[in-house]
Image 1 (cartoon, rainbow, N blue to C red):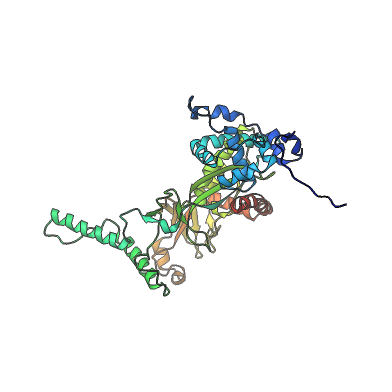
Image 2 (image 1 turned 60 degrees about the vertical axis):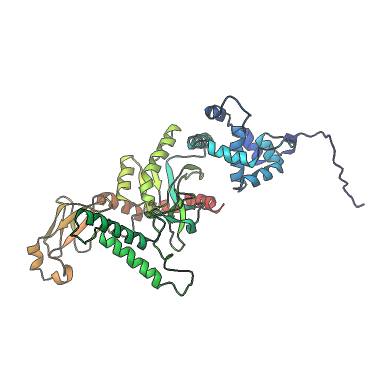
Length: 442
């Protein structure tokens, strides 16, 4: 016989939420495992002793965790979703007839709590993972990715007066002319407040933009400007930075770095920085914070895995000083040896194909602060050398430039080419990259 369900809503019913949530349910296990009661003490000073009660701090962080697990980024949608899930309500500590906090309350509370509180919670969860045997500690994989800022390139404005760069530079010239005439009425020469080669480069770039408009009517001369973090910013999000990933359009982003323990893929550290920085400059900070967090949990890091973006002589030395082996491929431009110019480590000198010495002559610092070692051959040796036309045709003598971290680079290069180095590369690709892919995708 065909059955038919007739629904008549009851005003009173015998119902217990805990009996409706299966024992194997994720949120039931989280409620039994995750003790967040320490948050009451850590947030006590953020509230006054009078007024209406706020949202429970434990409920707030459980809501954020639910939003992550359910891939919901909107507070409004999160509250709607939680109100229809019995397992989530049980995890939050709400009954089916209780009203959840307003979405606006969640947004305001997120702004109220300092970053240190979120980090305390992160450390607490990390310790739970360590106690559960999910973290080995000895091998950490590091990677980074740009995170799109909630700001548009169309809203970018000049840090200088809201005008085109060309017009601004003309105004600077005019003002300098007036000032100089007051000081010296006989002088008509203007003093420009920027190097001439930079001004010429910017002007040439603008001209190229105008010449390569491709017939687009919207690409007017005023819009054909060079957008740079030095000259432009977004007033809605001043901390966002213009950055570009190969093959993709320029966007306003943040730079997100993350370290993952290779045992079970547990995140051991994560941080946000300005997007106009290189991966390599953030590695020391990541390494120290990961080591400190592991030390507090009585663990030690012995190996660190990263891609070539973190290749840097200072980083190699930094890791060696902290007794950490850096499995970081050297940058593609690095050459472990110069063909035809053997190096004598004891005497710190090179020899040319004609067996003439090329000794170390001194250090040189680039504009970016990189320290280099210079090796120069004697001009008299190169002048009479039969190979000068092919070796150094346009300069008086042979010059060799090497980084002061050459020994660290050579050790890293040797690890990279070893059998274990290839295994470590596969380990990095199978741990941190999938975790980062999930975070950026969802």
